[in-house]
Each structure stands twice: as structure tokens, then as C-alpha cells.
Length: 171
Image (cartoon, rainbow, N blue to C red):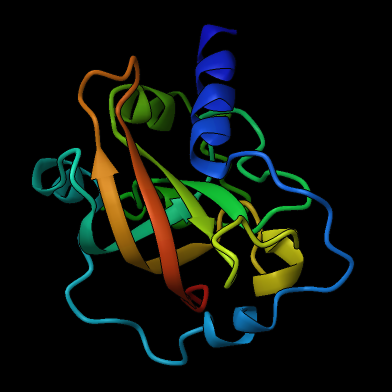
């Protein structure tokens, strides 16, 4: 329960309040990257690189939130977990939220809170699932600027994204 409240606070800090907008921001069309950006870091590598000063970063992660919904309804925003480096999590039907091995591994791993802003500097008021065709468990590469504040209660990278590449699922 404490983790849920902390994540909600992080999303509020990152996402801020936003008024309802009737049409999607036209800048959203420029956010989807056809090619994967080079040099993507894992969340752990990005955590080691980032500090409280915003800096450019490219990260790869899996949409998820340690047992909670990774999406903020009606906003172009979601959370990312590390992509497992072994193949056990690639098995069809695998759910990291129900896997004791994944839960243990992810317990202390960083989380990334990702948001996409419109031309007005506010979060794009369109659900990321609709905007980018992603879902929980999608592997993505995010380009943007990021910060990491080690004083927060949980290890969370705050990413303001300017591009997303959705990796194709392994066959």
C-alpha cells in the first residue's frame, strides 16, 4: 500500500495537473520513432548516470509498475520496469506480477515514470495506450530528458519523453 501511494505521488509530481482538452495534441504524431534510438541504457544504468539536473537520456524498459496499473488514465504517461536479461520472462503467458522470481528481482530495481508533454508544456491528455498502441508488458525505448533524485523514498527516474519506439514482440 505504501508503494502505491508513493507511485501516485511520483506520477502527480511528474505529470502535474492538466485540464481536459478535447483534441489530441498534434505534436503527438512526431513522438513515435520508426527506428530505435541508439545507445539505450537500462534503468539501472540511467539511474547511475542521472542526477537532479535534467539531461538527455535514452532508456529501454518494459511497461509495468510492480503490481499496479502502469498507466495514468487519460494521459500520455506510464511507468517502466527493467527488461529481464534472461529468457524465463519471455515465455508466453508470463506475468511478472505473479512470478516470485521476478518480484524478488524487481524489488530494489529502479522504476521510470515517463510523461509526454504537448506544445503547451502540459501532459498530453490522451491515454498512452491509445496514443502509442502500447500495453502492460510492451518493451519500449524512450528518448528524452531525465532526472533522478536519490532523496525520494523509492528509486524512480523521472523522464520527460520526446520520442518512443515500441519494440516488436519476440516470436
